[in-house]
Each structure stands twice: as structure tokens, then as C-alpha cells.
Length: 95
Length: 105
Length: 111
Image 1 (cartoon, rainbow over the protein chains, first blue to last red):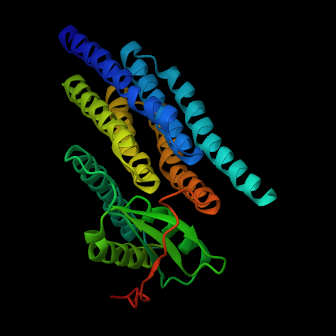
Image 2: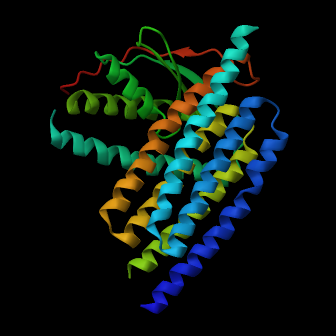
Image 3: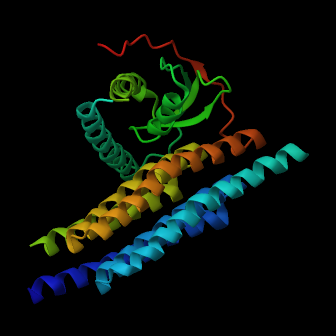
């Protein structure tokens, strides 16, 4: 049983490394992106990666109460990108 | 209103989500640049308004297609396809989802 | 035994999200990038939440992960729609093409 537990912890650590490696590419797009909608999409992907890192942390610590943090971040991510895009649309209308 | 069709619809939809995710992942790994897209305008044959809005959300999860816009009278949806060759497959899958939706709800 | 399955699912989902990030970097068109964000990333998080449910086996965890997955799956198309509409209205290059008309689908619900 301890062997399986150790295997899960190591897998969570390796998954955390892979997630933080994949954080490079959306940041590159965030700096380079020619227009504002490209940057919004890259920000969305960064939020998804951060949610994945939090779920890895839940599995590493075996603490189920940390899922509340994941819920709040998912809501902020979904509504935040909507609000930024809505602002863009309104700014176009006022011109 | 028929729960059996609802369960079948849910399983079909989950299977389509997994299939579309891995299809696009495989296309990324093959080195595609994503330049081959096209826009088409789809006219659903559903009656109620909220069925059309639900179909609008479901199209975004089927393989290679993403819904972009809907007009004011709820009778045509603007869909973006990732590959031009997916067009017949998209029409087939969307017709099946539409008939399942009309049966299940 | 369930720990091994959950660990393998964890690694597969991490690799899926890595592929999605590479797709964000490589694709040239805005709509193609939105395809990647709505589909591939949702698939990766779905696998992660299934792994969490395999480990804990608890009703509370099942309910909460269902809420997280519902937010991600039913709200990310809406967010994509709002972004696409804003991009179309301000005329981002590569997004203002003409649409082809599609014929009305004649499929009856009874068939």
C-alpha cells in the first residue's frame, strides 16, 4: 500500500513539472500576440494550466478541501475572459 | 422527457468530447498550422428557442467545429470548421445530435 | 490498484495540456487557437477530475468536481462566443471571412 502511495506522489510531482513546462508557450503568445483577442485566449489557457496545477496539489496532499479553491478559480476564469471581451465590444461601440 | 434517450445522448456526447480532443491533439502533433479553416452557416430545424441555444453550446464540443455567432431570430448559426474536409462529417454528426435532442427533451 | 490507474491518468492529462499549449504557440489563426482552448484543455481537465474521483471515492468530491466540470464545459463555449464576436466586430485579421450558406436540414425527429 505504501508503494502505491509513493507512486501516486511521484506521479503528481512529475505532472506538476510538465504543467509548469507547458506554462512557457502561452506566456510567449501573451507577449507576442498581435491583437488583444489573441492575448485573451492565451490568458484563458494560462488559467486552465493553473487549475491543473491545483488539482495536482490536491492529489499530492490528499486533502479534499483544497477543491474549493479550484471551484473559485474556475468561476473567476470563466467570467473574467467574458468580461474582458465584453469590454472590448463596448469600446468598439462607443467609437 | 424520455430518460433512456437522455442517458444515450449523454454517453454519445461524452464520447464525442474525448474523440474531438484527441483528434485536435493529434493534428497539433503532426505540425499543422491551422490555416485551413472555413466558415459555414448552419440552419437547424428545431422549434423551441432554448433547444437552439443548447445546440449552439453543443456544437462547440463536437469534432472540429466551433459555433461563433447566432442571429436575432434564432434560426441560423455561424460555425467555424478547423479543416475543410470535415464538412460532410460535421453535417452528419450535427444532424444526429439534433434528432437526439428533439427526442430526449 | 486505483492509485496506479489514477497516476497514469494524471500523466496523460498533463501531456494533453502540454500539447494544447504547444498548439496555442503554433497556430496562426485566432479561431484555430480557440478550438484548442475549448476542446483539448477541457479534455485534460476532465481526465484530472476523473482521477480525483478515483482516489477519494466520496459524494462531496463527486459533487464539487461535477460543478467544476460543468463550469468549464458549459461556460467555455459561451466565453469563446463572446471573444469571437468581439474579434469579429473590431475586425481582427483572419476572422472576417464570408460565410457559405448551408441548406436547411430536413431531418425529422422521428427517423
